[in-house]
Length: 217
Image 1 (cartoon, rainbow, N blue to C red):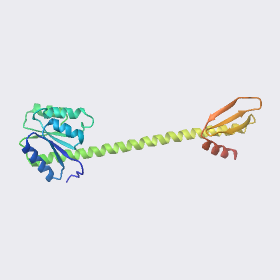
Image 2 (cartoon, one colour):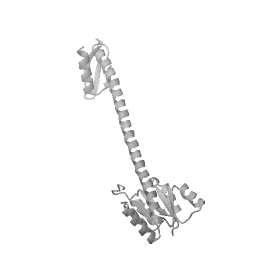
Image 3 (cartoon, rainbow, N blue to C red):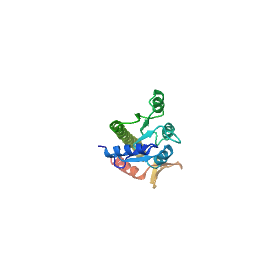
Image 4 (spheres, rainbow, N blue to C red):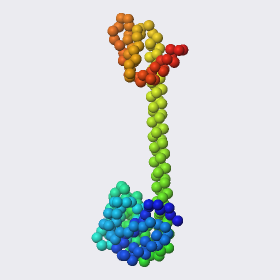
């Protein structure tokens, strides 16, 4: 069903039986799976490769599932990974705590494989849709930025054209004795009784083209 490619689900549980049962059920549903035996192992694996989804046991030796989830939520690269808690805790306080730490769902032990797969399917699909939406937003934002840059360039060229047109008219003025082109600028010599010159830095290619068209009028 899922198009996993290199994407995978990370199962975190200190119970080897739970790991075996869950991994087999997910593999049968065509998910790729990796396993961690505690919170520290999970954090280390996530630092090397980001899973699409994490099934996280709450009660584990060392750092428990709550603390593991909290650490995942504090890092920008891992805070968007959906976390589903697996626990024998059924009290409302524990569930509220897990959800407040950033978990997206709960699976109560002992779990039914059909329930696990149903919840995993839902959150897997939500993750794919979220990723696609973010990619589209990024793509459109990039396109908008490029359009804005092109608009600014067009406005600059338009302003440059108006400036060059004015200079071309001044060149035809008797007060201008000479116009000398340099690689990156035009020097206008004010004459005959003025020793000052005006240097304007304008791309030579645009300038010559515009002056030529103006003089031909």
